[in-house]
Length: 310
Image (cartoon, rainbow, N blue to C red; front, side, top):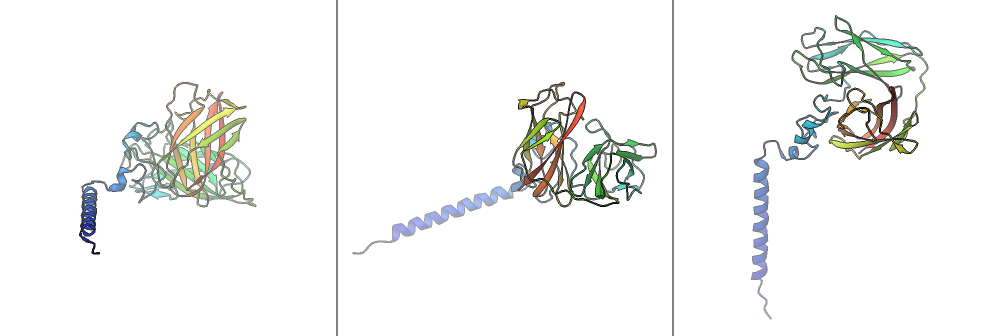
């Protein structure tokens, strides 16, 4: 018995034609995009050049988020960027006592910068962290008329430290651009390294429990939610600190790369909490040590936990 193969051949021909049409349409759509296919996906516009924070123009919805107008690109591991340089003659600081770290920021013309914009109520944010991600300090230095800043630091343990300066020039070539630059400092003495605590969702600080929810992916913008409780009860009396209810900073295990996780919860009086929202873009995978600072009753609290980023 003879069976005709023409219907089968015809079906295969039609399927092939359909596939070719779909492919042509897809290629045409890609070719008509101004920014490339990845730019239309949230968090994918920084895939080629990971940064520690998201540009306010990365997504239409981000432009309205508090704290999104001044976000520094990069991981802060260099002392210079775009002609701006962090300079200091302090290569070592004494162990076991308070120390004053003096530095300056020079511009593309080589002269000290003295005109800085206010960001989260301060013209300069300064961070000190030891290589094992202990000893975290966040202070606000004082600038002299000649552009020299002095950061008064608490007791430093022996070891290698990295000093970060976060600022935004208010004039010159870099006006309106946020920078994070850093230099290393040695603290002489016998160094005792502390192993990084395992990744965890919660941390304790002064009787408060901080819980972080979210699963950030490296190089992609991702929301994080922080909940603050005390004795099992929601905390609703958080006071404004640096124009927000909580300040969240992160450092990467191994290289101490810097990231500032920006708050998106609007401040409304002295009754913040219990939930706070942050926009996080951590540029690389691995363990990050998070330091959450919040204020109640005029006292500043700092909670630390390790976050695993895939």
